[in-house]
Length: 125
Image (spheres, rainbow, N blue to C red):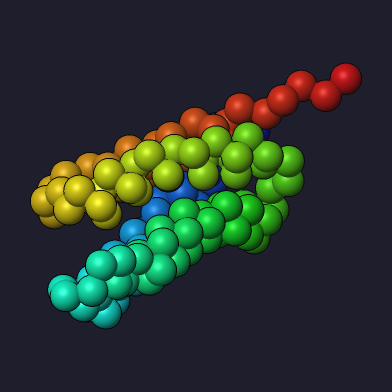
């Protein structure tokens, strides 16, 4: 029964975390694009890099904090592999500018992946 509860908690945390990170990443990406000067080579590069770093590195914090708020500990696998999954999924969604339906599908996929990762707990002996 605990694995089911952890799976549900992982999904409930991963879904909103993906929406928040997606919103931050796209907002910062738009800011970077608007601050870029078309005549200058490399303009907006630092802003774009900052957008990507913030978009990816806030995910582990949100996953960890969300699971702690729900009373779960030992979510190392969710946090570590969740960041890798978000880096792949989030980068595709934000940088490739997929449509609204595809964005919802990818964010839902991340929520399911987060739930599966939360359900796996390393055996401690």
